[in-house]
Each structure stands twice: as C-alpha cells, then as structure tokens.
Image (tube, rainbow, N blue to C red):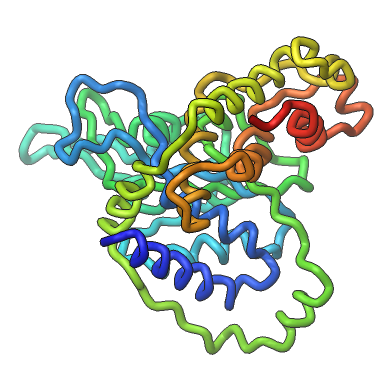
Length: 336
C-alpha cells in the first residue's frame, strides 16, 4: 500500500462514519487518528517477530449519554475485519471477567486457561468509571504491553489491540474515579459535546437506519499504514517545542506563566511526550503531508494532555479547566 492509497482509504472511512455520526466530525477524526497511531511500548527482551513494539493510541471518551460515543466506536469496528468485544462495566465485575481465568480440569489433572473478552482487536469498555479500581487495573498490562498474564503464563494480544473506554461526567453516585496511572495509559481523552443546532436537525431528517457499514480493510492494513506514518519527518525544533509545552505544565513560572502557577498540582509525565509526537505524526499524515508542522502538535495537545494534569484546589474553585490551562500554555510558549 502506498501513501495515496492509504489517504484515499482514510478519507473513505471518515466519510462513511460521518454519514452516521452527524455533528461529531472532530471526534471521528481523532478516533481514527488513535487507531492508526503507533504508541511505543517499553523495552522488551524478546522482540516481536514482526518488528513492531508499538500499539494503538487508547482513547477515553467522556460525554453525557446520547452523544454517540458508543455508536462511533461500533461504527469504526464495523469497517474493519477484526474481532470486537464490548464490556459493560459494573461495580460487581471482577478482573477475571475481563482478562480470563485458570480453570482446573479434573480429568487431566491440570489447569487450563479460559480467555476473557480482552483477547480481541478492539475492546470497548463502556462506563469504565462504574467498575472498581481493582477491575480497572486489570486493563493496565494489556494497554501498556499488549499482553496478559494469567498465573505463570503470559499471552500476547493481537495487533492491532485498541482499547476505547467511555465515561459519563454527570453521574456521581456509584462511580469510581480513574486512578492517575490508569488515565496515563490513555493517549487521548476526548470530550464529546452536544451537536450544533443544524446538525441536530440533520439527524432528524436522516434515515440512519438504512445506512449499512461494510468492512473496508483488514487488521494488517492498520500495520501497513503505521509503517507509512513512521517515516513522517519531525524537525528537532518541534521536539524541543513539545518538551517546552510539557515542562510548562510542571514549572509554569520558568516560562513566565505566573497566571497558572498556582493552578497545577501535578503536570504531565515524560511518557506523554511520546504520545504527543506519535499523534502529531499521524495528524500530519491525515493532512497528506510527510512532515509535522506546529499546527499538528497544537491540534493534539488538548486531547493528549487534558487528562494528565491535576488541578489545584484553587483552580477547581475558580472553575479553571485543564483545557483553559493548556490554552494559556499554547498561547504563551512561542512556536518554533
């Protein structure tokens, strides 16, 4: 597959999904960016046979019910010949319900393994904040290393392996806030807003039930497009720009950002730099370029960093969101 064929395929996928998910073009675009972005994993002693050590950019979607979060994920999964599993998370769900468990076979006198729904290509964890922290943590190893450990055995997951989780920001009862370590495994957090007035009218006029999505590509196509994106050029000054943006969340005064110096308790970790850079390369590819521009970095900064910043009590009292903080940083840090 060459670059032109890949761009045509991506635009076709985006157009098909936007015909169903009306008024959420930015969400659809960033979901596709997440699917085709290769996020580097930590170092492994045993290199994978295909030479790839990265995985998809896992995404957390936050929005009120009825804004097409789940529908968008199902629509994308319908366009790829891949395994798809959906888990409805509840407080009584156990880690074994996700990753699987070992079962004793009396006739053979040995333990066998029953794989859970995590052994798939695309995993939708619906209402993830309804599960207990113990169950939420069952996803950590799979999201970071694309593998699952059951007892003394470790099982590799398929490539691509992509986790998408949804949560409702309104409900407060019966929910468990995601721990910081869990949120940091998500490359992006997308806030799904209500559509515009005209888009809602279009929804009422459209006969969505007549639209049928057909698979357009294989899982191997994701890997092929990643290979193309990997060659996207990044200037050293842009790497410096990403580091400066990240350091500004930890030491605002160092960059003359006194207005937000008391608003941040914990800034982003160095791990986030790799996510921002990988996402920016994919955005550049989606824009039919083989090099990254500052605009690509600025586009991915809010979704890639908003969930990694911990606000201070003062910021919460002043209703200063992480998006407001990032907007100030993007405005003040000069573009190379």
